[in-house]
Length: 276
Image 1 (tube, rainbow, N blue to C red):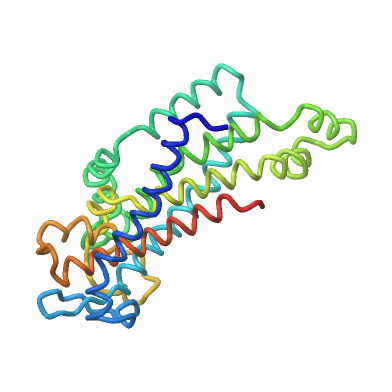
Image 2: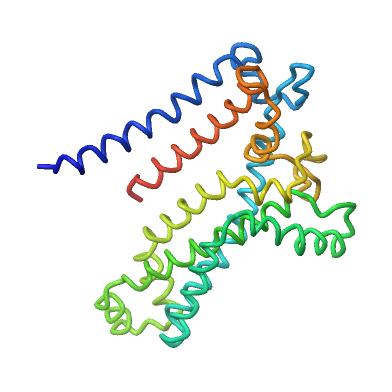
């Protein structure tokens, strides 16, 4: 039987989990009534002309997430394999401490580093008018989520039972075959959890992305051009929530963007709790 305090805590968490999407849904109803579902695939965002196209921000969010995962997953998994399977225990522990420090750095600090280092580097190396771009947002997110994936992958690899390792050795498997046939499959649930947890953080990241993405309310031309300034759902909310009058359609449209992020986050949570 649950203790009263524990039961109350669980009840409060359940209420919060229900209250957030309900609040966002209620706050965004005026927007959906005025603009309709067609705003999701509309590309024009001019609040003062009552045009609220969400497509540029949705595409920008998708590109930033895809770029970050494409960079962070292989790099973090490779680093975790090296740290847990190849480095001496002392160096592996130092690598873990370093990743824990990186994971704890506030996002605004990453954004300032991006402004100072990443944007000038992209501008000069790629001959761009400005370093603000979807590529910059993806690189920044990759740096932010890499420690989480690496740490959880290290934990997953270290939890592989010793008898499975010994079984691979008894079968005459070399290190590469043991890694690909035994260690990674056994550690996959933990690696998967790390990826999904990092995906949730990348999806909701605001400040760092807002500082480097450029916040241009237009579709990239062409749509796969990640070197152009763009917009994401989080950067739009972060930049415009302060100037949107409470209760206006503009305010409601930003709540609709928040609702979409909440639905994405809920989907990730359900996927994380689904058995592989």
